[in-house]
Image (cartoon, rainbow, N blue to C red; front, side):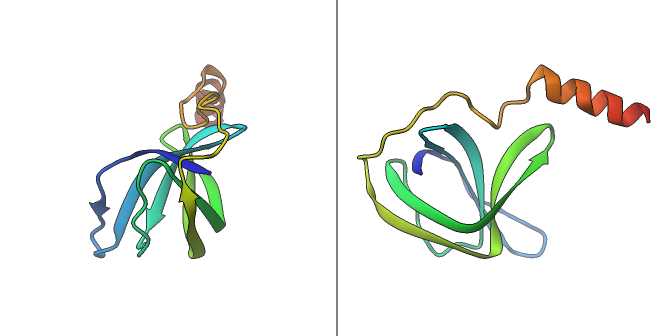
Length: 104
């Protein structure tokens, strides 16, 4: 996928560094959280993530690099992608599902 935006890194209480980015491929875009990566990604970079996983956090779908994930920079700027749909924006359906789950 291609890196569209890069956010400021954050630190956890355990001193892990988390980098944040929005990435996209031809199917859409998603927010990416990268834990303790040595790879310095920048907007426009084309990267490959192996061993990542998706999870819902605060009603948003997030792509995470796992502990054993590998992140590899393949190139830059020439990659076909679509920003829509943005899979990390909560939808009305996800809010309804959360309300139903909280009522059970």
